[in-house]
Length: 186
Image (cartoon, rainbow, N blue to C red; front, side, top):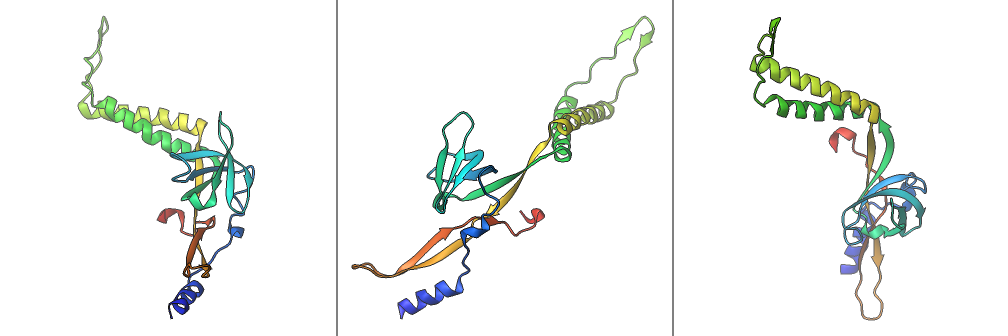
């Protein structure tokens, strides 16, 4: 009876194959997480792909083969976006401007022609945020920001049949596939 339940579970669970990993090919820039195989996130270029591993070249290091079974997150680079870079620069620049704007207001400068009008606290804070945000947006637009698409790792279920004293069981493996959720839901 237990074997029937296991077999039914295998039939009811969705299965996926390695065919979904079409875009993660040699030459693709990827960012991966693989606990147990990597200490943290690794960004590099895929130089080889087999049914059970990805080989990624790293900057200033030897290539690393990562077992597919260890992958928990895979992201594929879509190149740089200058609009996204400008937005990121605007946010960072405005944050810097906010910090600078909260500093004490400088004393007005006086010359032989007279004194500059004093800035109110709000005017000084606003000018610092807008000015720094504009500079940040300009720098971000020039530099750009890399865009990443995340791939989900759906489970692939298999049935392990009993052999030499071992009972039946389930085997879970992962295949790379594109994350079907829209970007706004991630």
